[in-house]
Image 1 (cartoon, rainbow, N blue to C red):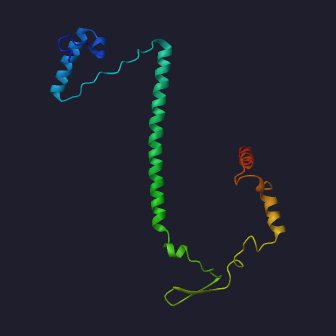
Image 2 (tube, helix red, strand yellow):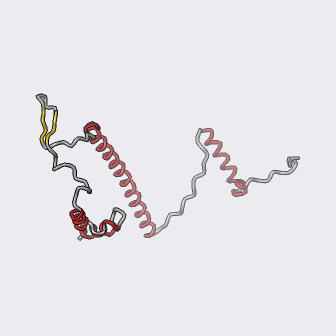
Image 3 (spheres, one colour):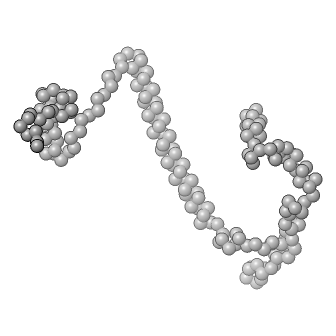
Length: 170
């Protein structure tokens, strides 16, 4: 059962505008569609302020647009420079095998005729030092000198950072 005999109710959008505006909009939509453009209503503009307050708000808006334009361009250039620096450093790194060489290189390096390393002799800097091989008194002295609250914070001391900032600013 359909309501085809009844008059169709107007759409909400049709109620919103008067008939003259609807005809004008339909005509411009047809013209725009014929030209290949999209039909879209322009957003209503806020009325401009007049007088000194209007000039001031326009000046502030212009300055903010200028700051934003400069900021995003400087940020883009900084990101590009950072990417180039990372790329350059990546290309100049030694091979991974050379970085992961687990042997303790000695203080004396022996080279062959071609200048290639064939042996190291002696411990470098007295060998490997671990926390277990050091006296507990030395360990406690270093902690007391560097950060006496070492065992009471989560690895980063907010109080220590704030103190360093205060010292640097003064």
